[in-house]
Amino acid sequence: MNTTKKLTIAIDGYSSCGKSTLAKALAKKLNYIFVDSGAMYRGIALFCLQNKIIKGTEIDTVHLINTLQTIDLKFIYNEQIQESELFLNGVNVALDIRKPDVAAVVSQVASIEAVRVKLVEMQQEMGLNGGIIMDGRDIGTVVFPFADLKLFVTADPKIRAERRYKEMLIKDPDTNIEEVEANLIARDKMDTTRAISPLVRAEDALILDNTHMDREMQLNFVLNLLKEKELI
Picture 1: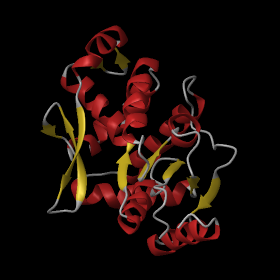
Picture 2: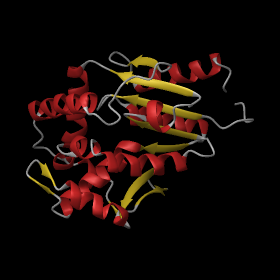
Picture 3: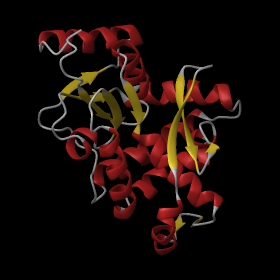
Picture 4: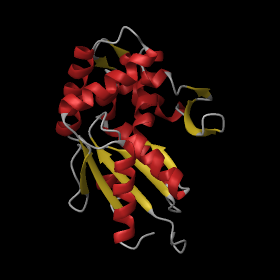
């Protein structure tokens, strides 16, 4: 690999497209840092639920903005599972942020400008020295507009729902695929139509439709791209 420069790689796309899985595998292959930006938004959504800042479908935005400075988010590497886990104010919340109640409100929380400003600042600081792969919704457009490589990941909605359902079924046997699909549709709409940093493909991002691709095929696709661009 070309070691003269550590790259910044931005991976954006829809929910349950396997962005994080791809980013983790790529980071491991290149010995880079992986940051799941979506986990950070989920961390704030969990904080809102824990502190009753969200009641039903209503967010007390003023309360949230006033308490944003008390929210500490850190990724700590777990050697046992060989992955970084999110800690919210010193507590490991890696499993809690994946629960359905968090998934149901995270897009709404992420649409709040003050939340995005706070997290974008944190994410940009993480990427100052390169050697980082970050996935999310606005990484190539807002967080790292000058990334060395930008990918926009997509897949057939039915396939995405099936993937998410299988993933959630392991943690919750009562998971309902219709609810999973409805949640994905709602999140897609909110992510693509919000006023602040909507989910859009950066003009220079390459599209990766992984509907018919397994994990190994996706990893090889990106590695070949990097080689073609003589980045590795």
